[in-house]
Image (cartoon, rainbow, N blue to C red):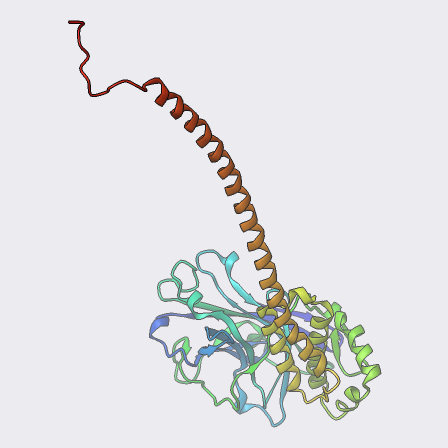
Amino acid sequence: MEKIREGNQNQLVSGTLKWRIENFSKMDKEKLYSQVFVVGGSKWRMLLCQGWKDTNLAEQLSLYLGVGDVSTLPKEWSRFAHFSMTLVNQLDTKNSKTWPPKGSVPQEFNEINSEWGFTSFMPISELYDKSAGYLVNDVCIVEANLNFPIKVEHQGTEPNAPCSELLFAPFQDAQGSGQVHTEPPVASPTDPSLARALGEVPNTTIEELVDFRGLGQIEKVFVPLLEGVCNSHPELIVCMHKRSQKYSECAFTALGRLLHFLKTTKVKDMTLDACNRLELLWEELESFKFDLAWLKPHVESAFDMTRFVHKAGRLKRLRDDVEALANELKRRRAALAATTIDHAVVKKHLTKAEQDINGIDMDGPLGYGI
């Protein structure tokens, strides 16, 4: 379903793309594209990949959202959108897996990076677990929730797209193919880029976006952090002067996400999963070509914390083991003391019993006095 919210100059269009993949086991899942969907006159598609391995060498399911008509768009095109991806649990929708778990990813799609998404969406083993509910009767269902602004024409001009196109519906290609394409309808200029939301960042709505130094609309929670680093490092602002507003929004949002992570994450929370999150945030931020020499030492220090957290975890486990063994030793000592007392009592009874039968020939006859 598609919704449109009107503003002074823009309309915020939102919609949910639903991709039902039948005969999933027979598909080429190394790179599987959905049909093209039309939302607010803009064309979108989803991409599913398998084979990428995380730092633990566990194979991952990857999901991406991409622009569906790259080859027909003008040079230096760009499109800004907030989105999230969901793998539907067909046994219990409450257990559906969504990234990011809260909120959405703000991202600029352009001719250089037309596909963004989540490389480590879910372990493949979890997808194929029959009891998990993500693959039922060889059917897999993927959804993308997105919202993005479109310009509103005034003074009697026509809107960007016919009203009929504003009704959410999948787009069928000229060949009338089915729901799933194993090859993209148009060539993508690059491999899917990496963009994963991390931390407990609130869901972004228009009311929660504020202007950041005329460079674009940034999530309110990030602005104080950005103000602080930009005051100390004005080159961050200077390097964006020749960039588009959408590019600047994405760049400073990426910087805000990383700063928010470093600001709110405690040392004790730097688990391996948190380390993977930080790595993804850092890789995303580096793609915007900021001079990050001032920030890199802090990020490297945060990565080092993972090693200390691992050692602290091992120390805690050793302490727990020592305490458990001490309790077991105490229990066994108490049991030994009780057994020693029982032994002494039984030994005393044995001595008395031996005395009672001393001098009696157990092998002699009973006799009858003659």
